[in-house]
Image (tube, rainbow, N blue to C red; front, side, top):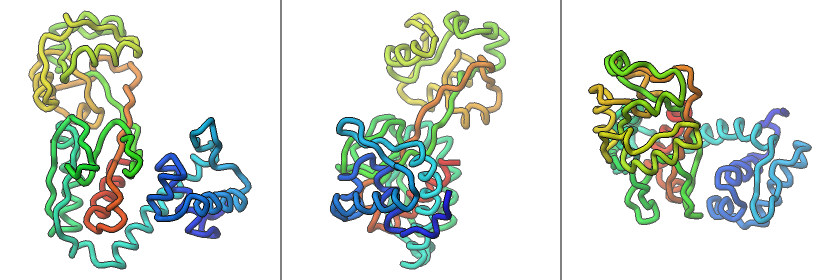
Amino acid sequence: MTDLGDFDWNHIRSFLATAETGSLSAAARQLGQTQPTLSRQIAALEADLGVMLFERVGRTLEITQAGMELLDHTRTMGDAANRIALAASGQATSVEGRVRITASDVMSAYILPDVLHMVRAQAPRLQIDVIASNDIRDLMRREADIAIRHVRPDQPDLIAKLVQEASGHFYATTDYLNRAGRPKSKRALSQHEFISFGDTDQMIAYLKPLGIHLSDENFRLGSQNGIVAWEYAKQGFGIAPMSQVVGDATPGVERALPGMEPIMFPIWLTTHRELHTSRRIRLVFDLLAEFLSK
């Protein structure tokens, strides 16, 4: 691909906003531009590159394969530009105020601490509130400044960024597997006890298309609180699904079916339009994006 440094940054910024918001209208609102202006900038970038970046399917706008390849490059440029803007407006160490992050209880307890160390090192005067909740909180009501979720929000005025396609597996303690037997196939999983993370019926329905057929009889214990449910798995009560990052790092547990393909789930980083005017939210959002994308 031609060196992106040869192109107009405004055109690239317009492409990036459209790709991440999924529509010209949302991207125009995000950038404070008119939709026709944004459309012309993307058309100019397509002409310079000699490829089509988006195509219309009915009333929706879908990114092409060439667009996906360009997106990987422009995201890196966008993050760098954001850091430059932050540095130009003042050192990160001078950023202060409160930023509220909402994430699942499991992510809040086991994954966020590493990135919070990064935030503390770069902006020691910031105050961070973590709202550990498995519910989807409404950012438009300002219940939080930044949300980390597995579903993309449907409010058009929110800024959403897909930062990772994460993977998970089924885990159990070595003692449990020695006692109950190690399953050799997905079918064999139905002979085991499972730990429920909240709604058992929803969990059964989610696993069925993956070829894993469970019933209420498999779930003798569970909790709406993900940390509690994971603790039960760590205590040998049965098998539980868990993020690979957490499961592989937990002593005493192992993958219950090591040969099974991972369960994939997206991680969306979402915030409101204040991202463009708030240094503290911009700083935390960028650090979260950088950390979670790895």
